[in-house]
Amino acid sequence: MTNQSYKYKHALVIGGSVTGLLTARALSEHFAQVTILERDPVHNVPESRKGQPQTRHLHALLAQGLSIFKEYFPGIEEELVAGGAVSGDMAERMHWYQYGGYRLQFKSGLVNISLSRPFLELTVRQRVLALSNVTLSDSCAVDELVTTSDKTRIIGVRAKRSGAHDAQVFEADLVVDTSGRGSSAAKWLESLGYARPPETQVRSNIGYATREYRRAPQDAKTTRVEMISPTAPREKHGVFIFPVEDNRWIMTAGGYVGAHPPSTEAELLEFVRALPVPDVYNIISKAEPLTDIIPYKYAASLRRHYEKLDRFPEGYLVLGDAMASFNPIYGQGMTSAAMQTRVLKDGLRNNANLQGLWRSHFRQAAKVVDMPWQLTVGEDFRYPETEGVKPPFTDPLNAYVDRVHRATQRDPVVYGQFLRVMNLMAPPTSLMSPRIMRRVLMG
Ligand SMILES: Cc1cc2nc3c(=O)[nH]c(=O)nc-3n(C[C@H](O)[C@H](O)[C@H](O)COP(=O)(O)OP(=O)(O)OC[C@H]3O[C@@H](n4cnc5c(N)ncnc54)[C@H](O)[C@@H]3O)c2cc1C
Image 1 (tube, rainbow, N blue to C red):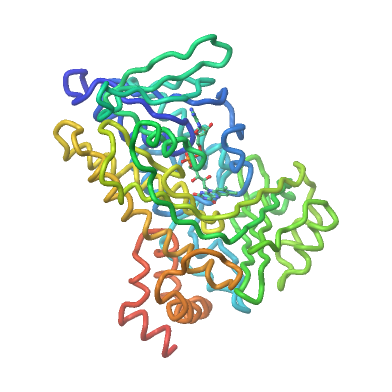
Image 2: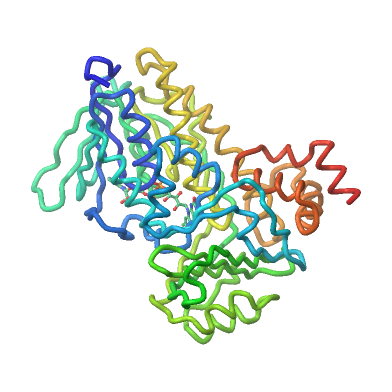
């Protein structure tokens, strides 16, 4: 693309984690220059930074997310696999226990890839920064939005580089906030005389404990993923272990509604041993640990309803965890973010001059968020301890989904559709089509 063919001059992205990088990729088709401003120092290695501590924990990339990554970065799946990521047919490689049995293992046609979150981010960052019109300014914290004098349009940000005496103004036609769950967008909007977006929270009080292990020689080529999920509300504990690059396993143990996994070695082993099946215990009790046990507490899923605002400044958008952050157990965050960047790309294509982009964008992005939100919150409310406003019909829907879960142990058609829904490739309502319902209820 030549400079003349870009519609706009400059876009700024606040935050250089996965949403920021994918956003920059989407913007790069429409802006002559895209600048990512990231508060942390960023190095050209796989790393978990201070501003995204969750990246030390197991991160699954759903099939819908992988397909968007592949659309944005042709050949990325092969590149990740060449770097040690492990890929394979999802249903074939997942040995997944829940509801008193194992789900089927069969060829589903859905591919998934297991790798560490820092390695995924590094590879995506290298691809994004290889674009001639994208740059990253690290150690650069945004602390204010810059507006026109009537405050109706955002025209840039004020940001301070680490070690610099003064903040610097960066001008832009569009500013996109991808600064994560801790985003200051609501505070900044309020200080400019706009309303904060209404929020919905569902508190399921999740705890994680993560540790990496060396894979034994007999597992060097394994693609298997072991998953033991709790059957709610009776059970609250579960564990996943995935093979990742550099011949490692990453194991994350989790607990719902305050029943958090411990973080000492002996207690964690006992936590995993006490689960209904020994598949993960058999691996970790013999494997060499490579890291400490890293705990993480996740109190609540949080949704900020930007789509409900009547007034919003032009030239500004909010994407990713800054808009919606989900109970991480279902692995939806990066995929929801990727889907939001596709909404942005389409919005930019259909919008003549950025005017009113926020309204159409937030409306469409909210539809993207609805799907993972509905799935997560529905499952969370299986526990009576979960706090928040329970959506209507949650209990009868969950009673039906219980039967879907059980059918995944015997029926590949139902399991295939269940996987498409869990991977955000099909809407949850597709589990209620006459074809699937018949198999679930009569099987
Ligand atoms: C424990 C846990 C496990 C998870 N597991 C999964 C999973 O399995 N699969 C999945 O898809 N998702 C998972 N997620 C969610 C996933 O981590 C996020 O969706 C993903 O990182 C994208 O988030 P983001 O880029 O919007 O925000 P973040 O990753 O939080 O990044 C925000 C970035 O903005 C920067 N920043 C913040 N403020 C400023 C500022 N003022 N100026 C400049 N820069 C700033 C930060 O330094 C950071 O780099 C999990 C989350 C948690 C908590």
